[in-house]
Length: 212
Image (cartoon, rainbow, N blue to C red; front, side, top):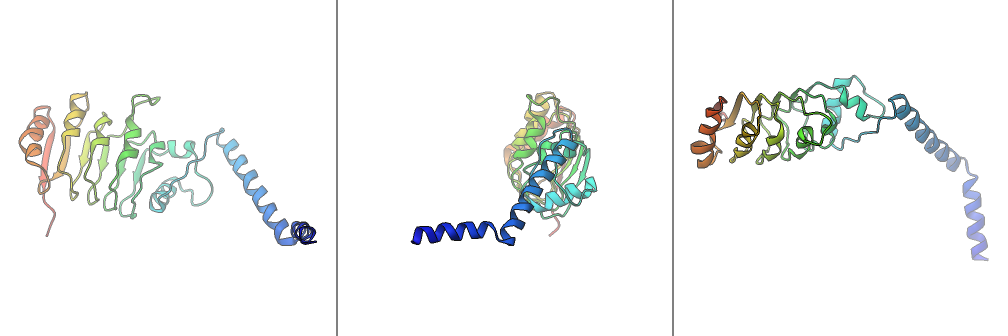
């Protein structure tokens, strides 16, 4: 009797207006997603887990609502994301045509997603030439070593001690012209070896100190 009761309850639940409305909404969302993907030339959807980054991207695209796709992000050539409380850059690697990026005054510590912009197996090299990472929580800049088109870089007010990745960059054919680093956090090796090496390649290195 209990089993029959459960079956009857389940059947009754499927007939309720609430269940029908939820099922309709789910099907509508799936259909909408398919339509949008088709409209974007079958471009795949992109999820940006960081709310601040998503807000900055949507503002740049003038797209406050709706799904974001790889085709949408590929349209971005300049992104001003200053002071958006960004922590996670995941998804920014889909901005394959990004040439100018300002991430000043956020809480970024992991630059790994930027590495995807310059991977050799990419269909084309990253066109990123300007990158501002001032006032973040960065300690490791290794992911920047493959951004060979980068010309201007600012790392002021971070916790970077090792800048050997920049030496790797220029030795690999990078076009770095100027870099601003926080002189109070650099290691002795960075000051005595890496900076002279960078300058020998024609890179203008500026040491700055945060205001106290």
